[in-house]
Length: 293
Image (tube, rainbow, N blue to C red):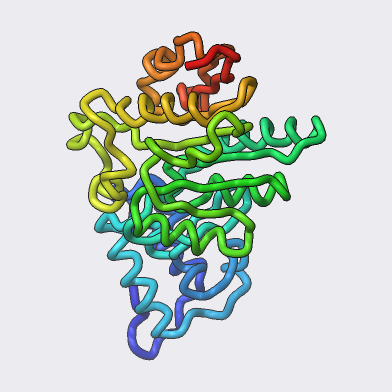
């Protein structure tokens, strides 16, 4: 991609087009990825590439290295060190699950429920289980200021990323298993939100390499049917939530019937499955009933 010796440096827009050509057939969005990587190298916004001076040779070399790694399946967000989630920059890297755009609707449902508590004149008490990078908690803290919020994550590496992303937000990060999380809050929580591992183990061989090779297995897989973690979430949320409190739980798009069925007991009411923006089944919401259990 380097220009021939003595020739004029390539403009950023030309480099981005050539970068996209290198990625084509290897990643799902070559044009977007190429522009984002070049913008990262230059420290500019992607929309500014048309305005910048031609990159110098060192910048071109750095860009080529990133393109090679992206073509090899390294997630774009690991290369840039960031993901964007509901307008918030979330630091990510090896050892933590990269937040996906479809999870923004899950966060949105939890935010709406927390705002309803505020409208009723109370301070919302919210728990995020399987917090990973802390993206959902960061969005809640940003969009519902003042809520009492704890993010629970079992993996120490991921918990470290969550602490980094939630520093100064007022959110407490607790490292531990969701099964026995926060017993002192039993029966008092307004909202439990979770993006748990939910990929069935037999599906491992079918996953894209940037998932199977880079996302931590603990955050991806959950038993033979992909529902083990959601069953544990049901038990913990049943314990934590007050009567009338809401659970919001993401699931695999093949779980549109099986995930809601987990919440069919008397402890739950108003169990609803919701699609994502592409129309695929994405998350279940359930309200804690007044029945003990």
